[in-house]
Length: 419
Image (cartoon, rainbow, N blue to C red; front, side):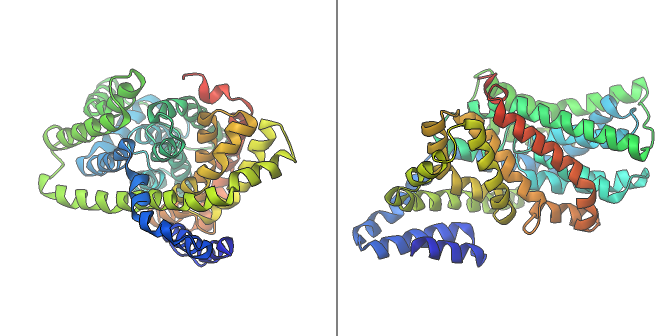
């Protein structure tokens, strides 16, 4: 009966965190093991009693401080120096700026919102189709869950009980592969549609743009450098990054008003609390998974179909494409990791890092696909164009992501080479 209750609530659009908690309560009631109610709150608290989860609000706060402090436009200016002169230069600037932002914000929805406001009007003004401008910006948001730091990687690392810093490192090569594929897509579309020719900045202009970006560039250097070189944990790097973002925005660019800090703290607390509550809810839902032996039953079913790790990952990818269309990516990671990860490791000897990169990239595709498609609707709202018009320009990028997923599933080295 519990699976039916779970499915009904999920398709009735009950918030995922409540679905998990209420399903666990129903299961305890149905099993008659009332003693479990006594440790229910303790079990929820244990789910969030993890130092690594502090990175979530800190990365969110860094993004808030960046938006208020004027760092986004400086990063866009620096991107113009490197790729602005190519044909379709503004599209490449959009992509490169998204790479810079992905190395700071870590949240696809936040990145799509910020970059849509900045890039779509600028691209439309230079003669680009508004649907293509919004599609390029939305696709660039897919880099956020792969290029470190990634909020989804933090959550996966906590659930999988693996070092979050190593999970970040595992995302570096996949992130570069995805960005390269997106650049190829832009180049091919540019040849087909004859994009406007870009222009290179003069020497003094380029120097000014790069110098203006140096303080903002300290943030990704602090985050990624601290983690890769073992100087700081992801949580410590996030704390340092938020401090740098505050000081740069306030004292460097003088665009951050300290009186607005309370509002930023409030938004950060609200957004982070929703994610952390979902993790706590997933911990009590783990009772249902454990007592029903779902991983073992599912493993028996899948291994009866194939013993090939690549085919297993293809089955997982196809399944998660549908899951991602219906459930938010973060909620889906929290929901499916405890079920599928043990199968991947124990039955197919798949590295948890490869598995984490594949499922996080797969599930974030749901941001851009109906019927949920939160990222698609954010790009539509911020870019002032219809979701259908964006989708018509978005499909080549989605094909590129599909190709990247197949490559990451077939070649484990792409995720584990730097570990």
